[in-house]
Image (cartoon, chains in turn purple, red):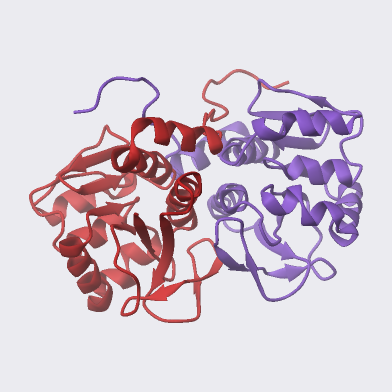
Length: 201
Length: 201
């Protein structure tokens, strides 16, 4: 049984949360719901994400089930208010000691750094924050990989890379064939438009 | 100014909603917030998505701003309860007459069919519902494209294809260069893992 805990806070980036959430919950569904995923927030009440989505968390930081995976999203909140919030960074630090995996998306890597979780490690973050993360010191920022695995710390590039890294993680935990089944359930055969500059109709 | 309305209902698929939402809101942000996106639900109160995310909508079906784009997600609710809900299918039918674009993700195409919006059109849906949609009659199901544009009706394949199709749409509305800027902001350079069966470490 795997319990995934996704941290949420005001101004977390909307897709940073819901990309991994969709992967973890679809994985749980395909495994007969022996696994589950929960959203964890500092306090009760709606959380408002960076792009305006208002979400209700399932648990608070001081009352949640034991977590095998902790996912930390990025977004404006991760780059500002939560960096100065010892309740959140302290929670991440303690979870890093007890959870099997710590996973960040986008600028969630800045929060992992503030929590002391990535010292000496190779990490990925959103391209616009790579210089900032490198300047904080003590980490090697990998700029040419969608996600980076260092021990049991999994960090990913911006926003949409949470999907790729979460899918990698369910494969690491439950097998490559299972991850492929999740990918097929999500029909995750991405095809971004406008990758060539061919003229429109 | 473009107003995007994303329909939400119980058991809508979580990423079907939040994938396009992230694209539309990021597009709006990059355009100086002259555009906006809103979530629209049948009634007030939390909506619980198919994989458990609980979300608060911004407006109800009978009280929302004029919409230039209407996005209809799929998921269990789109395949069951909402198909039998004339309040929702009637709303989609009326919006199809007044909105510039009607956009579906995954099995949202079944709701468009129930609303009479896709008669005689080419459409895409999740691979597991292609036979069902085809059997309903009056449509040509395109099985080998991530998303299908027919007039001002844009339908997409399963779950993650909402991102691809929403990105196409903001490019159609606001230019290819703008869409590329949105893609870069989202760092949407997808790289699904396990696409080759190479042995793990």
